[in-house]
Amino acid sequence: MELNNRKKYLIRKFYDDYLDLNKSMEDEQLTVESIRNGVEFRGANLWILVFATFIASLGLNVNSTAVIIGAMLISPLMGPIMGVGLAIGINDFELMKRSLKSYFIATVFSVTTATIYFAFTPLDEVQSELLARTSPTIYDVFIALVGGLAGIVAVATKEKGNVIPGVAIATALMPPLCTAGFGLATGNLLYFLGAFYLYFINSVFISLATFLGVRFMKFKHKEFVDKNREKLVRKYIVAIALVTMCPAIYLTYGIVKETFYQSAANDYITEELQFPNSQILSREISYHKREIRVVMVGSEVSEEQIASAERKLEKYNLKNTKLVLFQGVNNGDMDISNIKSMVMEDFYKKSEQKLAQQQREIDSLRTQLDIYTRSGQADTRLGGEMKALFGGIKSVALSRSIRLELDSLKPDTLTFAILQCSKTPSPAEKKRMADWLKARTNAKKLELIVMGNTTK
Image (cartoon, rainbow, N blue to C red; front, side, top):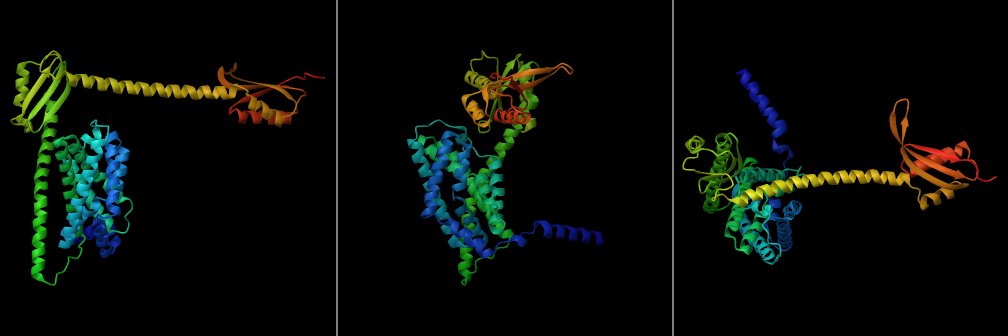
């Protein structure tokens, strides 16, 4: 018993010392007011949202991650979403109505702005940054939930740091809305639905995280004088929360199932479709069609081997999945363009790496040539400076050369400076000349040679 009490004490002490939020909590009223103020979308907030949408659309259009991140930092979209979570947590029906209204207005303005931009932009190519916002995964759900928790903790504590900008980047609310606008502008309903799906999932789980944070930190509930009205408000809040959460939970369940299916299919391909003298060239997994398409090159796989592999599908929970195996390059049903694109992509990557290596070598050679050029030439500027600093010098010649020490047979790079003077300089003056030339030519080692008198 005493040992258990000691363990409980140690756990409690650890929690109090390191995990207790009460020590750094901001005044609750200030936190609530901060979230309330971020809910409204009028005037400056709405204009900032429009500009952020334009920036994000430009970033998606030119495939620039840096520009997209900048737009996410500018966007004030987190305000009404956190407002919904706070309203549910403290039973504030008025705040919920304001938050949902602002959320609707912000969504409509963002999608409309993006649609207008993509309707008039001359760049209509579908970039990878756009495609990444059309198919949410289970990881997006986790990011939204954990990001929302980080956000409410940061808002509710004094040491906010750079958490809120980080949450804005991680949860990525603006890019899906811009992609939805792209879908409307180009008439691609699948892009619109996929992007809006991701936006909705992110919004719901950020609100859920805010609600959980508010309840965990025990924010005070709104008190009503009329208890019947309080019960009615709670019913409305619960109803709205359920109406919002149920589709999100259903959609998330579908995402989880698809993620597990994709993982199982990849494991199946890796483990069961490895045949001697054959190589997998490409794979395509379709959860909705329940189909795995694999392109293979090399020795032909027999029908018996394929049938044996198909029987193992159930082992990976891939029952009712169709295996389509393409072999060789003469198969009429095989997508030759897929192979061509893979070959071209591989060729492009290798060419890019080779060009980058060649460019590094060229830059290195240029640097070395520049060193030789600077220290191996005596220009008019250097001559003018020497004439002003040191009297009696008639000519100067610079030469960069390799000197071999015969005792050690060790070569050494050396810069020679040959001066022709009207009179022989003193040893101190020679040293001063050598030091100046060494610094002026950036030579690590310099040897000064002074020619004899040329005039009597």
